[in-house]
Image 1 (cartoon, rainbow, N blue to C red):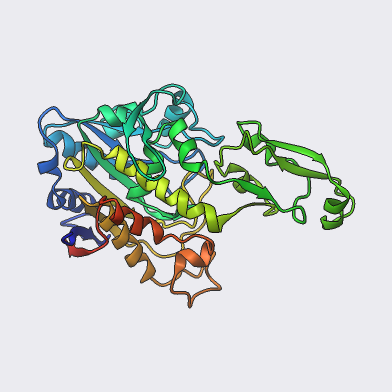
Image 2: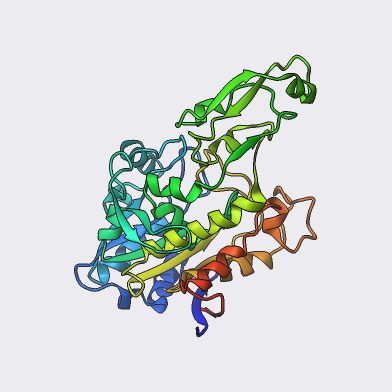
Length: 383
């Protein structure tokens, strides 16, 4: 496969040319006007940000994307699918309220908001995949019905994928609730008895009722940091879907995953879903990554930690694999910010593993190339 072209722009601006006009130029150079044709129902897939998060892409950067689609003759709508975990985006009502609260209302964006998998995350379409993991994938119906797709992703680190860019935005983000469950289904958390304090903070996060607090056995009591701790969180493997929200909820680090065997399979499933979202749209899709406020965790959290590197710029390509690879490469070259969680690791070369040592994040690139989704070979063209 020939190298892909990734177009880039930094965030420098001057009075005669600001960032927003340059963003329009970036999209034009990347081929948006060739991708969109008259009356194309165009899904602009993005992450509206969890309530309380501050790292998601600002709406004022999304409006030029909407305007560019309209100028090309398309009919844009903003979209995302329901989350699997407990939060403010688990159904269409809460999701839309959160999106509007975070600034994505029609009055500021100029396009309607449509939750891809409907009111309760059940409006899905089965798309043939025929991979080692799936025969079909469950994709949010609006994404399948759309004629064209523009992925607008905030590039950052991620607790399970290593990083989140275009591939995760459409793969994990495009799956319906059932689709997200399928992607996570091999990931089963375990409880570290020596760390669990029996506080129960993890229980409300599990919408599947897979968590409970029970009395410790004698052996488990011996592992407790404090002998007065008599209860231990337990996971019902039959009910657990592997959404990993309990990992986020536990402040003691008592929830863990068998990363060595589970994460590679998760990454492959996510890439399978990205391919399913692009089924029939490979020539009708454009991918844009914002390398700004590169936080050490996903925008699904109700907060955002300090960025690990300075703002880099905005990248665009018709190849999501090349785009994400270029994004990773650019991030790796940046100096670590002294205010970030990596402040004491300034000499690291792999910033992703410095935060998430257990994630073989490169595997998603190898698998994406293997199934023909794109290439890691790219030419970077600055505008």
